[in-house]
Each structure stands twice: as C-alpha cells, then as structure tokens.
Length: 585
Image (cartoon, rainbow, N blue to C red; front, side, top):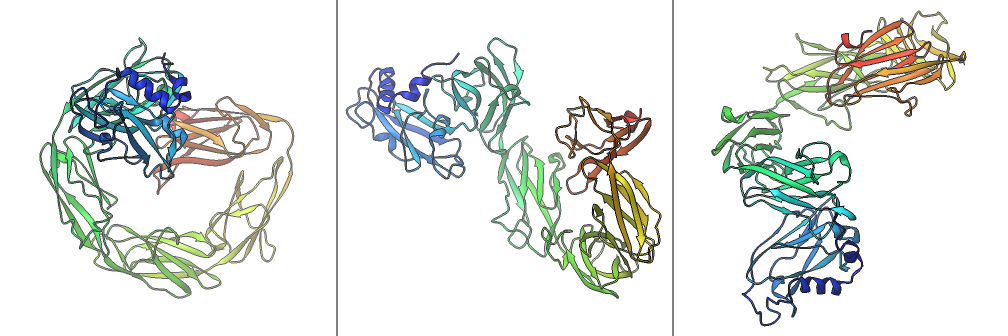
C-alpha cells in the first residue's frame, strides 16, 4: 500500500521538500551554481509528452542551479488549461529527471504557472514532463510499475513516492515501435489484458507517435493493490506517403490534413476539404492498403511497409436547378433538408442527393418534384406549409433541371390535445395521421373527425394514433377524456440489458426488467434503444393479444430505435430481440 509521503508532501513547505530531495541525493552539487564535485552536467534531451495540457520552459533553465544543485523548471497551462495552472492540477504534473520524479504538490502558483524544483544530476541527463489527466493521488493509494517490457520502453506520469486511486499515465516506446499486447495484474492476481471496462492503451499520435496513453481503472473502480504492467510489441518502420492532385486548385490546403509519413500497419486517415465547384469522386492506392473514400471527405488506408502513393480524383459538380410550376409560390434547392443545417445550392454531385424546399399558394400543397421524362419525388412535411423533396441526381447526369407541381388541398384543424404528424394541408384521398395527447390519470373517451359541414369521417385509432382519408373538404379533429376505470395491471419486459435500453418518457423511473404496476387504462410511451446500432424487434403482448414491431432506423445517424404508445388495458409483457421469432411468444 502506497501511503509514502502523501500527507507530508501536501503539508511541507517548498523548502522542506527541497531539503528532503537534497538529503536523498547525499548533498551532492552540480551545474553552474558553484564548483561541482562530479562530472559536468549535460542535458541530452527534454520532452513534453502532453503539449495540449502544459507548456514546459526550454533553454538554459537547468544551468541556473543553486548551491545545492537545484534548478527551477517553469510550467504553465497550454490549450486545455488555457485559464492557467490551478492548485487541483498540481498532482497531475510529473517531471522525470533520469530516474527521479518530481511532483509540485506544494509549490506556489504564480501568473498561471508553477516552478518545479528539480535536482540537476552530474553527467548526462534527460528531462520528461507530462500531465496525467484523469489520475488521482490518495494516501491509501497504490503504485504502478513495469514488470516486463522490451528495451527502450519507459513508464511516465507516476511516481514511486506516492499512491494513486487508479492510473492514467504514459508509456514511451522507441520510434516506429508498436505495442501488440499490454497486460496488468493487481497484487498477486492473474495477468489481464489492458482492454475495455476502464482499461486501455492507445497512441497519442495515431500515425507516428512513440507515446501511448495508459488507463488502468478496472471496472471503472479504484485499484485495490499495487499494479504491474507486462508489455510486448514489434519494431516497425516509418514510410513516406505521396499525395497526388492535392493542389490548391482542388483543396483548401490550410484546413486539409495530408499525413506525410506513417508507421507500417497503422491506419492513416486524411481529411480533405474540397473547394467549389469540385468534389472528390475517387481515390486510388495499392490494393494491399485497403484504401477507402469516406463521405467524400476522408481517405483511410492501412500503411504498407514501403513508401506509398495515393492519387485523388476530383470532378466538377454539375449545374442543378428547379422551376416553379402552377400554384407553387416559392421553390429552392438545398444541400440538406433543413434551412439552418443546409445551404442553398446551384450545383450537385451525380449519385448524391439535393433537397427541394417548396411552398404553394393558399389552398394548394406541393405534390411532386420531377426530372422531365424521369423520376418523380414526393414531399415530406418540414414546417408550417413548407415541404422538402429528396432528389437523387442521376449517376450519368451532366446537368439537372427539375420541375415542380402543386395540387388543391384542404386543411385539418386539430383540437386541444391533438397533434398533427405531417402538417395541416392534405389533398383529397391522402392519408392523414395525428396523435392524441392523454392527460395524467385520464383515458380517451371519444375522438371525433368532422367535415366543415358537420359530416362524420370514419377513422381508425390505435391507442393514441388516429388515421383517416382526407375528403374534399376541410376537417376538424377533437377528443374528449374520461377518468380511468380503476384497478392496476402489471408491466414486465424481457431483454438483454447489455444490448438494449428499455425505458419510458412517461416515467423514467420505471424499471421494465424488474416490472411495475400502473393504473388500468393508462397510457405508456414505450421506448427501446440498441447500444450497438443493430436492428431489432419488439413483441408486445397486452393480455393475450401479441403485436410484433420492427425498430426504425435513423437514416442520418444509422441508429435503430423504437417508440410507441400502448394502453395498459391488461397485463403487458414485452420482449426485445434481434429477430421476429425471438420476440414471438
């Protein structure tokens, strides 16, 4: 157990800390603070492993030693700590001078920085500074050490003189060296892979970095004994990457990122900002690299054990336009179906999509956008009386001129508690959908759908969802409520909690796995999410009546989810699974 010096380090003044360190060094002196008894001090290297967190003084600071051979190394905050070093940051700062480690726990903070007293050794020495981000010290904490490691692998960001709750530090490896396996063990326990559930290792620089970030927090809990690491890896090479056609004609060179070299076996990702009116249509590289073009903005491949040439293919976007047909008041092409996220466009990419925003004159609704003699596209309600049309540009098109049409439409007026699913305008024969909101401790008594002349319109209702066919007339939808009938029913769900999240926005405290009771006749909005982005099915049995639903995929996010109102008219059993058969019971 590492209780060594923790409270002392927090309480002792700077002079006491310096005195203790000098005593450990047998009162030897070095540097230019006086005549050194040993060899001349020579700084071989100085490095900062975490430049986004701290800035470390460079130059001849190490020559300014006092009579006892100590020099002050000044450290201040960098980008992440731009507001300056605070008292809470001090335990995260570690300065390694050869085999000695200095942590400025009790140093004064001045001008947003801290000066760390370090003893300058005789002869050659190296200085390594780092900021261990998530790591925390504790008087009841434990230590971390390397039990087995290839030559040249060093551990930074921890000190043998302190105890820690868990570890968030660094391994530095030789250039082009790749770690293939890292294991840990606590006390006399078994070796475990440093992967998942609070444990990880990864390069700070994915392409060339010789520093790995190490996290040791098994189960996201504090460690319970001293921890050892066992490290293995392979020596690789660094090879050059030549990019073709990445010129200022096609690419914003300031924003784009084109790696010039990488370690073989590592994944290379280039970020490409293409200038108008061009687009990135393809990429070529040796087949062994597995090169991919992603979202026309990223090139990804695996670095081979040789220099590689990657060729970018750019093409010019084609002109696109849309004309307003009869009774279309306004029409505009957008890059995305939202006037805030998207921008108006006049050019497009063959095979990609553009979006037409249309608004019609009073008494009409946009009904179609079409390619003359080709595909016809239907509307999706956007807001108020505005509609978007998703248009796919033909692959072989050299230009595209779209037409638009509107049809006579009538209005649906919702009453209190009625919400329209797709606006208020509908043409004759169109399916109309609306959702009924149910107040707490009440249930739906009656839904009424009437024309402007008072004629009743037939409709279907599934709990809170109402559908009917639009007549050639304006329509009103209203709802009345009544009190619940009394009594309770039980709700229970069966599902893999590691795969699915089952919950309800009606009451977030409901635990579907354990089950709960609700008032009979009440409404529950059931929601299911999949943690891994996979499709799934939901089986809902109310009493003896089973209905199976398939999850819905979000086309923008690629994620699957389910949401539906159900009425607790009898006991409810729910199953969630990967197939229809698995939820049929």
